[in-house]
Length: 475
Ligand code: UDP
Image (cartoon, rainbow, N blue to C red):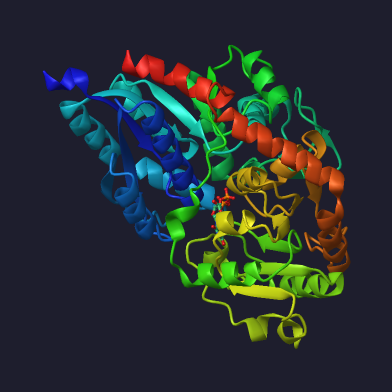
């Protein structure tokens, strides 16, 4: 029958934009190197703000017609969530998706042979569904190998203390082959031991090693130590197979034609080489008005050029939980009086969104103040742009520790002591100057850029990682 010839890989991303983009890039990589496989992406239809995905999906459908999107029926919002973390909600919602996932997998397997089911970490709640159908399930981890390590080790950490990580404040956690991790720098949703999000991640951490393998968006030379430690079973024994296939980053073309894009690029065209600091904080980063004021003053005093993406502060709890998108900011009211006018010759403030990949690859960019989302980190490394780490949510504080202490590929934006996370204008002024001037940091970043390229070139470590995987799907 036809069926024997139609080997399919089914990908199941979680609804967050960064996770979706990363998985689409994985799909493209598989199709490029193993064109005999077909790819289906299961799309969740969530009832809350994840940034609008439909223009993006339309674009991918046009430019990569071999990727099939299978849209699952809408799920409704559980109203009884007690967690303050949006991650807990994601686990809950994706669990409600299970009947749809089951149905989709069954119907897909009628027309093709599903050789692999690759799930985002939040979709770990569907592992059982695939298990019952006898499917080989892989995790796709959209952060680095060090993060995989910390999660594989999470059940061990859980069992060695009765405290929440948040309370292990003045002390650090000892994790094999990682720098000492201050308790508060553990991934944000696991800081509170009694939260639903903690429970969800603990479950994920225990499911991950039972999978057929973990596919990681990183490359060998970037995270040698962590990759080796995973393989040696230092975090979990017996170690799950891992496959490093990165860096997979958003292709620069998917936002073509947006108004912000023209504005940013035209402005950058008129700035000197490597003179501009870019400040951008992921798809969800929000600051209070007070913090925005400190950033403005710091930028002004630094006397450097800047491109700054500004969003409205969160208005209420709903918004803090990322259920509702913030409104367009009114810059005049939000920023210190006269700031825009005084800096208009050397600064550009854009509202809400900038075409990050294109901006980072523009020759006028000399530094990047980032929230340390893993995609942003990889995008900056691939563009050879030195970074200052200003983590805000998810596992970003942990990423900062690794990027600063282990890889030495980031400066750190340090919070004002005893301030509940406020970064002062003085600190911003200092780090903005430093990131533009630190020639050693630039050199290390350029080296990382070269090895990133090599990993995805012929014979490179990430293509080997992919080949190993795909061999078992096509044989
Ligand atoms: N991004 C962008 N413009 C923005 C903010 C974000 O293009 O103004 C893109 C960025 O290039 C990256 C993604 O959104 O690909 C954010 O992913 P990341 O993992 O860095 O952070 P997350 O949003 O998942 O926290």
